[in-house]
Image 1 (spheres, helix red, strand yellow):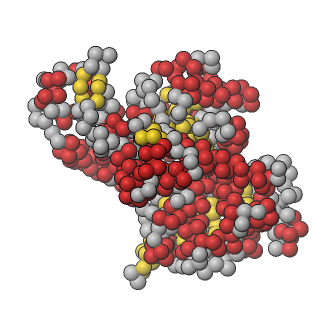
Image 2 (spheres, rainbow, N blue to C red):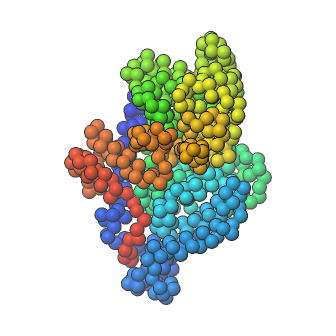
Image 3 (tube, rainbow, N blue to C red):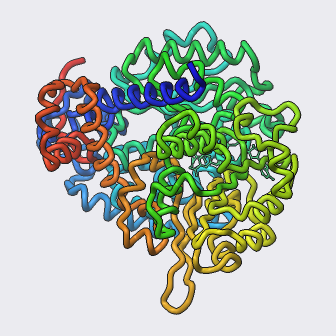
Length: 604
Ligand SMILES: NC(=O)c1ccc[n+]([C@@H]2O[C@H](COP(=O)([O-])OP(=O)(O)OC[C@H]3O[C@@H](n4cnc5c(N)ncnc54)[C@H](O)[C@@H]3O)[C@@H](O)[C@H]2O)c1
Ligand SMILES: O=C(O)C[C@H](O)C(=O)O
Ligand SMILES: [Mg+2]
């Protein structure tokens, strides 16, 4: 079978598995004990007294009613005034805002790390209230629990660590993982985010401290996608670190040895996968921030056998495609013109190659899904890495980058050669889109941006997608001031919009794989797109999740892939899907929301 058909077959099999996993058992069929429809059903707990107050899953603090205090042996263990959850949050926010002003932590946002500490302490005490605060203030606190502050948290994790969260599997645990998974208290886990800490954002190898990124991603699963926090599990696989500073730091919390490699490394990951899928056969495992060398290999190794995906390869691709299609619309052209876009990508790692692979497939699909279309689509991309433009003359070329290596003769006709610099490539190609996934802050220098002024596009797009903030390839101010007002700008970490004067705003979109859904491209209205907005604001993220989940349910039902979940079988789902409103309502009711359930004690 031809390469093209193999690839499309692989893509549709991925879609099938992802749809299945979305229908059963994730977002749309989420933990029903906390849903709005079943919110009144009491939750059984097997503990009482101080044990309840010390359990963040069940603790309500001052919000325990008097009857509950009696029922759970809490009378006298709390101050007498029973608070509503709104009052609790008000009290917390007063404290948070006061401490924000006094704290002095880092150079860019002096309060960021202090805010993280305060929120993290709440997370440790009372999960329901933590997520209530996060959801109500997602725009303000996503940059604290997630990128960019999470980067700072990971860099300082050995000092910040107080209470453990998630699970740690280390090279020392070989042979033990199958029993270790039973140390986790939850019988149902739907979502695992796992990292080996080898490439955390653009910050490199942070070893065991990388657990922060898995925790941050799962916070968004709960706050933005309505996943039940009792069913998520952040995981760190510690196979050592090659970060010499950490190896020399006596206070470092991880294994102080160099990373395992080769078969030894694979054996650890294999054992982990076997263990988690044995205990939780329906779990989805998201691989996060693995160095590229392993990101692709592990994806190939597990993708057909397990419910897993790599966020940096596949999630980034999904969100970049949404942005690229949005950029076409912003040029006032129909999306179907996407295959004509000339795209220069800086960075050929897991993210860059993930994006060009998916963009190529999208173009091919738009051109009729033939082998010829797939073949010709690759000529729309110019990939530049640390050694310059990648051509077929490149020695020891990475097999994942090989399909995108430019033909040397043809590059020569364009005035380019193996290793041409980014500025030369931008000058010669005059691209519609300049996309950065290099991890190199400031890579889109004045010279590069000046060169982009020669773009043949009416509205060139600049995607400075590297994280965290200081690793962005350029800032929106630099982009708008150098290239001009008529551009599209998106970045991986959040930046403020730019005031262009004359009442005009230069929109700074956040293009981050937290959105993950290609369905986004259609979510933005024509008006918004023409104003330069290609990604929705994060404040709408729960709403987007709902819309996308509903679309996935409908598609899965149409393709006869939906299995149903718990009390809703496939036939009932089919009925629900006949009515647009009903399917949205079904999804909304299935999302977890942070409301305190009534607790009833039952002997364990
Ligand atoms: N916005 C998002 O949603 C998102 C998603 C995934 C990754 N990222 C970011 O993308 C970056 C890269 O991630 P990755 O997993 O691909 O990393 P990686 O280390 O695997 O790849 C980095 C690539 O950049 C290239 N590079 C280095 N210096 C360069 C230079 N001067 N010019 C051009 N290319 C250069 C390297 O050769 C390599 O190909 C990170 O900063 C990460 O935070 C962002
Ligand atoms: O974590 C993020 O903010 C996005 C992405 O997964 C990354 O690795 O940078
Ligand atoms: Mg990542």
